[in-house]
Amino acid sequence: MENVFVIGVGLIGGSFALDIKKQNSECHIFGIDKNESHLDEAIGLGVIDEKSSFEELDKADLVIIAIPVDATLDVLPKVLDKINDNTIVFDVGSTKEDICLKVKSHPKRRNFLAAHPIAGTEFSGPKAALEGLYRNKTNIICEVEETAFKLQEKALKLFSELGMRIRYMNPKAHDKHIAYVSHLSHISSFMLGKTVIEKEKNERDIFDMAGSGFESTVRLAKSSPAMWTPIFQQNKTNVIETLDEYISNLKHFKQLMENGDFEAVYNEMETTNHIKDILNGIQ
Amino acid sequence: MENVFVIGVGLIGGSFALDIKKQNSECHIFGIDKNESHLDEAIGLGVIDEKSSFEELDKADLVIIAIPVDATLDVLPKVLDKINDNTIVFDVGSTKEDICLKVKSHPKRRNFLAAHPIAGTEFSGPKAALEGLYRNKTNIICEVEETAFKLQEKALKLFSELGMRIRYMNPKAHDKHIAYVSHLSHISSFMLGKTVIEKEKNERDIFDMAGSGFESTVRLAKSSPAMWTPIFQQNKTNVIETLDEYISNLKHFKQLMENGDFEAVYNEMETTNHIKDILNGIQ
Image (cartoon, rainbow over all chains, first blue to last red; front, top):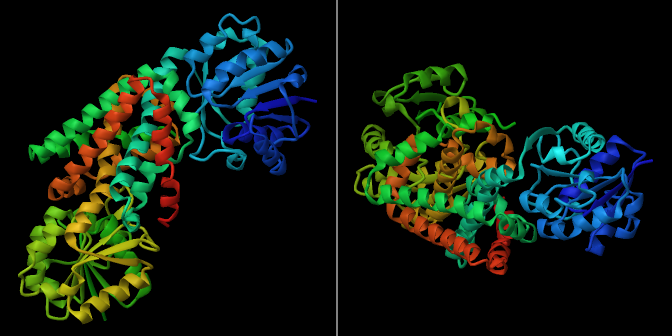
């Protein structure tokens, strides 16, 4: 019988638990979470089978670390200290460089696989866990060569059963590119939400005017600050670079409008329009 | 038999045509469009019954003007010149001040209703027309008092049959608020798309890393530049104001990151998080 430990029973960890249980009903799912009420909720929802603790990690076959990336820096070495030689541990964090560095010289480094499943919603907690969340999603694996063959194989088999496609990258490249295609989107969304709320705070009715376009661009502003703050902190240099470029593009667009150069405004949009083709390639 | 003329047989006009036909099968739908191939396509798709021209507008009972807002400024007075006394004409443009001003003194002003249905998708053309697009959507009516009672009534009955809820505003307030809840979203999305495409142009594979979050924030960057350029032009002052505030919020966020003040970064997101409640109110 496989013992699966999920540390952090929220959206990401909980969704792994649901799919693993569905694939292998004989698995036993243990949950660890610093939020006791989340554990109770997860049991009630059938997301995990029972509560557990770090002391029991020696019986784990698989450990999934699905907590904010600052907590992962602290928890991952402690998990590696506890597990036995045949346990595979993977994280799911949206930053990879700091995490890989942190365990670079850990004696159990080969039991760890650095992963980033590109999946999620703007919600959080055990209630947000979804069956099938990972189907057709990309999972980025970093420094795969640092993980023991047999354990790589075990994790990759699981990802494949869950329907994920795998991409291999080095942690530096991961953090740089993910800043553009994910982290910047979150900041643009939060700041868009802020701008509109500030302006319209005394006129709540105004949101009646908002359509699906507004909803789509501010959706990510519902995301969890506890999850995102440490991501921005760990990926500070890359994220600041993306913000510089984004702000500079917005200023340029504004300048074109101020100059009354609407032919150029048209061209700005026309050029970006081919994002259609790019996005069609995403899924 | 009701003769309905739809000027501009794209997403918005075509969707009106489909729903009107469904509600009242005895209606005859005439299409006018400067793009001849769109007219053929619209006939083929059953969006309109036949092609028509401005010369035939004297037999119209209802005229819907669903073309870019710069073209509306030109076309609306010509339509009003042609119609008879019992015809109701409405537009659907995303700006209202210039359009209302343009026909302020037209002898047929009372045959016109200034409308802005908050509905649409990022696609365009007759193929983008959707049945039921307007169900549960907001329709903002401006200067309702300038429209003849009986004709107001006729238009409102139609909007109600299509499932829309009505909000009344003056054109100035409409243009100011819609800049925040719609126009700014489009620019933020276009510039986000631009920023990422510029950076990643030589690494198309990178878009494999993009998830639903990125897709959601750049969805509007697929929108039609021909539709949006004249909107930004007509609403220039308000849109520039929203851009100033948005850019200033982004710069502030970047400054907090540069200062390493991640407690403040957290608070920025936490404060904006209540957009959840606001958005839940939208639909």
